[in-house]
Amino acid sequence: MTRKPYDQFSKQFLEELLSPLGKVEVNKEITDEIRQVDILFSAIPTPQANQQSLGLLGRIAVGISLLEPFRNQPTKTEVRNCLLKVFTVMADSQRKAKREDASLPEDNLARLWILAPSASESLLNSFGAKLDLETWTTGVYFLADSLRTAIVAINQLPVTSETLWLRLLGKGETQRQAGA
Image (cartoon, rainbow, N blue to C red; front, top):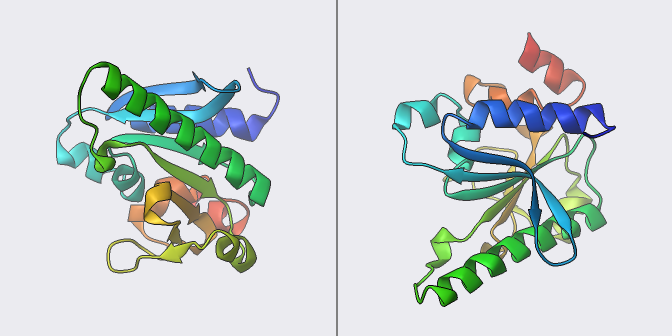
């Protein structure tokens, strides 16, 4: 049990929304120095309708996803700590594939989604985060391809039904608009 109400809320919230789509493990312990991933999601084959009903969250919840929601803008250190988690999960998957003498395509590696109420230009630039407006919406910033990481600036998401579930994890006016 956490002493931080937002942390507990966001984990329960995402667990409830994602459980119909696959296996949700809250506070999943990963190897290395003991670290916990807020949400480790592993998708199961499911009808597209279920995934589409979650809009942008459904697009994010594909394959193996690490979801790290923040109540305030993450610091550079917090982003780096999240990167350590996704690297650890990827390394575990690669070791398992090697033990089983199986191939592990790059596209099957875990992807990290940092869900931030906001992300300053300074923070985004420090990680080389870029928008991909051909495929994704405003507010979703991708780090270099090999890092398999995106920062979702919730306050920059368009106010549409597609972004509703993520905007509920926002802060202030963003969250109020989503709840209205």
